[in-house]
Image 1 (tube, helix red, strand yellow):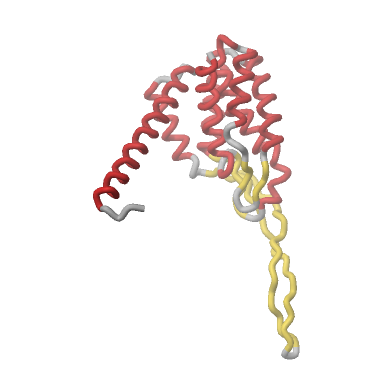
Image 2 (cartoon, one colour; image 1 turned 60 degrees about the vertical axis):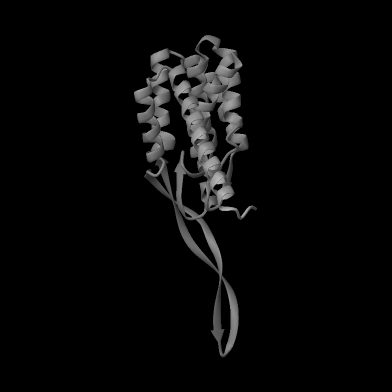
Length: 225
């Protein structure tokens, strides 16, 4: 690594420029995706802000007993020290994430009604749901994790196959709802494995999957044409 202040300054400037280019490219891709599904630029920026801000908002809906946390406690009896296992009871709060579940679902319902793509989207949602459910894994202390690039690939392929003339909205709905249902909702019985705390539907490990699946699926549809 160079110690020259000028070289360090050039590297910092290059990193800054690269970051700005990446952000501009990402925003351009997101804008293109929303335009393809018929949402204006003004509404797009409002939705992005709402989803990102809403990712920090979890709406509690239910509490479940979690798997007891095992720990070890030192106990002294007549001057002798013993290490005894102790199980501590915990609870898991089931919540719905505003940015990762509520808002994407509302956008999907809007597209279903606006474009009348109920049948085509149903096929896509079912296929993505199955794939997402097979790939999703509960990680203790994190939530449900999912490889983020596979659901949008599947959603884009199904959309191009079943609705070539309405592929963009079908891809968005399939990627968003399929990921949400397959990764989170169908894994509700396994949430006790995550330990105590908050298990958020559409949050933590799957927020990026739900948020990006619909967008990436639409971009892949555009690239596949």
